[in-house]
Length: 303
Length: 248
Image 1 (tube, helix red, strand yellow):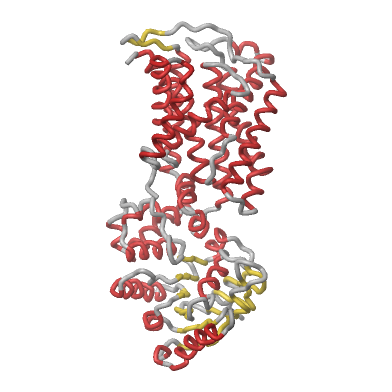
Image 2: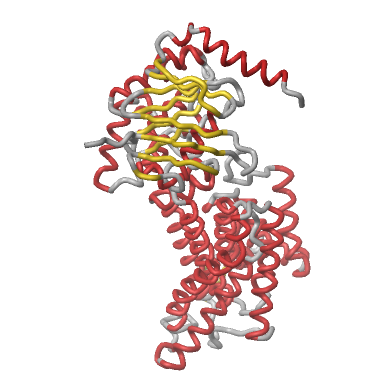
């Protein structure tokens, strides 16, 4: 096994894992596959790009790179703003589309089709506003650090790993140690019983949108920082995201993150072994294999 | 000075579809800490009646008053704050959550300072649950699940506790244990509505009984002696005969 491939896979897997956590949360509580989740990743990246550009224009000193990283303080601040803006966007989409369908007791397939429509709309709005031309948070070049064992990584990549682990750890603690988390797990298992137990299910649904969109924004910023920002970046991630959510087990936050890393590493190894054109096929193979062999994934609860 | 009843329904018409009411004009009053059994043949509308009170089935006409407050349109998650706790017939615990988390979830609607005290109080009433608090609720037996469901409902110190067929799927011995606990709960000051198919077991613990037939109250009175009253058989068998004779 190529150790550098492992590192590259881990880095790619962090973005997939963060996105998959959002997918698994929204799926387990809203009970449909939200195919617009990829677009939330793209929008998060573009929100951060806009805020960073505005901040950079107003306060030039914030663009000076922080320590070994390629970006200045504009990006962390813009990322926080992007999390908030993305959450607002998700709530608007829910209010305009999904909540109306829920009120009509629409079937799962209608919700899924609506999410396809939302994805198309959101993606095309980005293309309309920003064109398809790739954009970047920074043009600064980074030198990879030797980590030993033939592995190299840039400071930005290492930071992405740390941020992803911290964010997923935080979400896991939120779900397992807080009243909000208990309510979310209760709604995920039995919405009607949760309602009877005093849980405001509508409020929980709003929290899930905010959380999922916030995680998508973080994933988008990381993808934009490590690769590039394009309107299709979320679409390109969609298959790995769903593969990771299903491999990890629907509803399992650590499972989604671990599965994201597994898929990232598998893709990197496949690229090294059979060529980059087969990268997308890896997620597809994993998705089918999991559905056939262990549909509840690594950490999912049995039906 | 007038005191409000714990629960009152007036002219309650309810059902899943507007043109097809299952509950048809039920007047019902629960005055204080008493145990009232809602009985009736299959399809009489017993479960629909209590689900409508809890807010799970649409109410088309009539009112539901909780402690003198109109709660007809109050959503289920708010009704518990008005003192109404409902234990469904099936899937009445969160199987993937631990026993402790089931109880904490119920306590989350209380002020923070009182939560631990309420959980301790309920664990004192159900010591078996306290001993297994870290265990997943899904791993419990049917009787233990029913006890947990009742314990969860009691965390908020409800004024009215509604149980929808708690004996379903339980052995007679376990039914006896569950119903014995209901007597203790009533003595602690909670008014209980018990929907049951198991007439004898329900009447043995109930103070009062209401018999519903085809969504309407056909009999209301003391539970004592009702088990052997020919009226019960008449209402049950009569309903069956009427249904058999009704052309399809």
